[in-house]
Image (cartoon, rainbow over all chains, first blue to last red; front, side):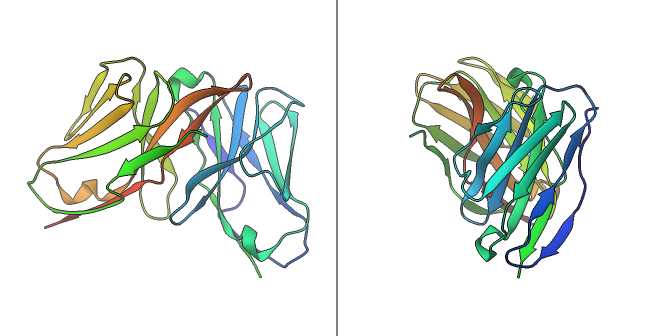
Length: 112
Length: 113
């Protein structure tokens, strides 16, 4: 089974901090995605990547950036964390969208 | 802008009952996905529907896709407590040369004894 691992289940950060959320997949998937999940809003796409060093903006990229230096790792960066970025962050990967996504376990980020 | 609407968003039902939930979407797509999420957990893939008329069944859940109506249904048969979770549908789209899934807001199902 594909495993998508997010390095932290829970994080608490201060306003203005630079925050790194890490995601690693072990099945050589080319496609990786970052979503945030908020009550009543469902899942919203932040950034995605189809290959190493490649990135594309999703629907809500403001305040975020990403890094994909290696195929298996896709990092989400909050340049200067703000309280409105408190959320559940979900990473997903996919070999082929015909199979859908495999999700990581999520990181619940609280910015205080 | 693509809209993926799930109906209802909240459902409380008794064990043993049947019910159908709906996922409507506003653009052409021939692929639709259903996911389940337990509280505090991540999303787990339930069904992948890849063509018009596709029907998949797993236990007490059956999903179908009508691409002409832009509608997918998830039918619950003889509900049990273990089905309590949030269910998401997601639609495959191609936008600006990129392929991605767009998710509905999720339907929270509670099955009462």
